[in-house]
Image: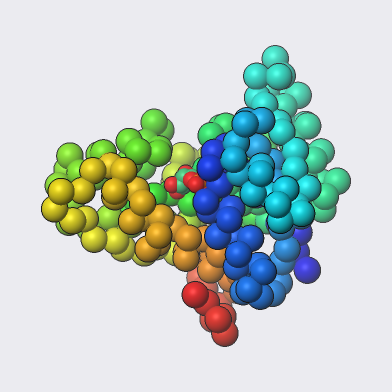
Length: 214
Ligand code: GRF
């Protein structure tokens, strides 16, 4: 059993999707043992507590030095023997030291088809606003490993979602969550926990399939 830590900052709907998938037996190789929030008022914390998962609040601004924050974060993860970190709407920048320590063991979900509409400053509703301004007919979501490039790590899974006439950033965000994010993230986590993901030359190879993937 792999211990999973989910890092959050907001509503936690992706965390909820993971909790639900775990309860439904869809992540047989892992269990969420820790939720770390960058904000003490994140609703994601309530979701974790309701599911009986240990929670911690870790605010970057409580530390004057990046190194001290990193040491605290790594300490929390190591004490819990975390084998997979999931960034699910986590708004604090992860430093190169933490990325290096958890290389190919840390994944992120982004609400577009990377490499479109991603990178520094492109998060939340801004992603969907940019997609609408460009007039794309299709957008989606991407789960990827985290590396030193913002939204630039090896891609694990992607799913396309239609853009519809009259969409606003809010309606598009909701459709991308419902049709893509909440399905992709549990599937990527299950694949990782099953040992089916390998990174070769910066590209993810999926070495097996799951009996109940959605
Ligand atoms: C999601 O859109 C995710 O793709 C992005 O941040 C948002 C988090 O939403 N990285 P939630 O907190 O999981 O509801």
